[in-house]
Image 1 (cartoon, one colour):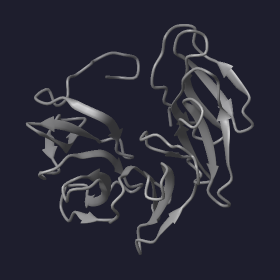
Image 2: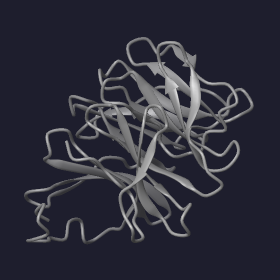
Image 3: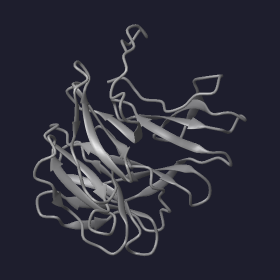
Image 4: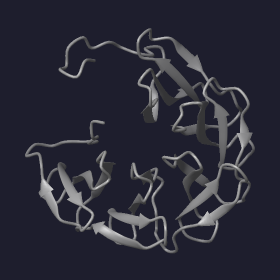
Length: 242
């Protein structure tokens, strides 16, 4: 629909999207996963025309697609080879290639703003932590220890300096990971649920949902953890405008 709420149109009416739905950076397409018979597959749809394209057709689930910064590639995880691993393909679904190969589950990929790396969640060292894989050579680096990260995709700050992570170490809290030195700290943590976060374009604030007031409201936190509430009615999935 238009930003003022007018002209709503149904897209991809023949299937039901599951999980993440991500706009391409040029604003022309949306990529998402959908259930097809017994599998979950990845599709893209053109916003202007509604043209639907099936991008994967594998014997196992394919999920959590994410665009590369230049919109030329899509990263996702798949169990097509019997275990959850990361894969990359061109944005038209061609030339898929496996990025990770480990007995543990590798999920929730998120491309770095410069396109050189992909952050993901894995329990390969005994706990759910954040890892980084270099796209050029496949080198994997562990960024956290004991983060208790959930399977929600980590989110890079637009400037690439931080990664925001959903953690269930104590409750559902939000942690900030500084990429340069791997420093990790809880920026939002209350006895209630805190999550569904989104970075501001300036990389200086996070919008998120908190249930601390008895209902899910939108809050904003700066990098010091200073917080303010923005909504007084139940709200979900805040996203900053570009």
